[in-house]
Image (cartoon, rainbow, N blue to C red; front, side):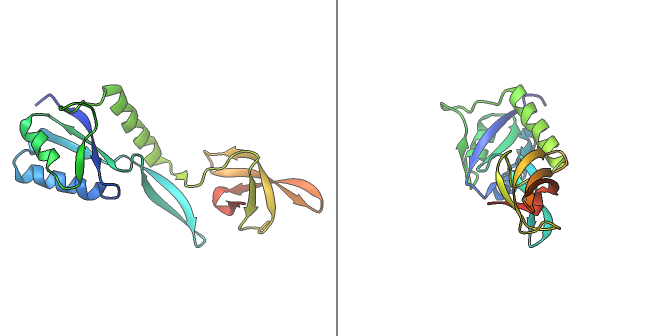
Length: 177
């Protein structure tokens, strides 16, 4: 069956996963599963350090929104509109407007890239002051000289005995001052 298009649904923030499973089970129960191809919550992996341990968690790209690939007709539209947690389709007018093919391809590509390589939860900028939390230079303050996001490392200029010394550290070893 052709005619599948992607639509953006507005949901209650924090309830995206519950809304997704509710929509999928309601479609199954109502016999409309062939009209709803997939429901997607775009996420990315984020690395953070808590209590000295590096953890990788998932963060939503668009909190409060989910994407659904479906054939839009009166039955499927009614099913989606009356699913608990969905506040409506994103778009103007009475009928929902599908996403452009280029937009959905961009979102899917972005999700693929960001799921394979976790990015740090905290973003740093060059020239920013930081304090070293762990390692040989713990409790020293410094200024970020270089940022290497691919490796998750920073070059921090730390003053030791009155001299500025470059030190390569991982993101999780420093904190913003």
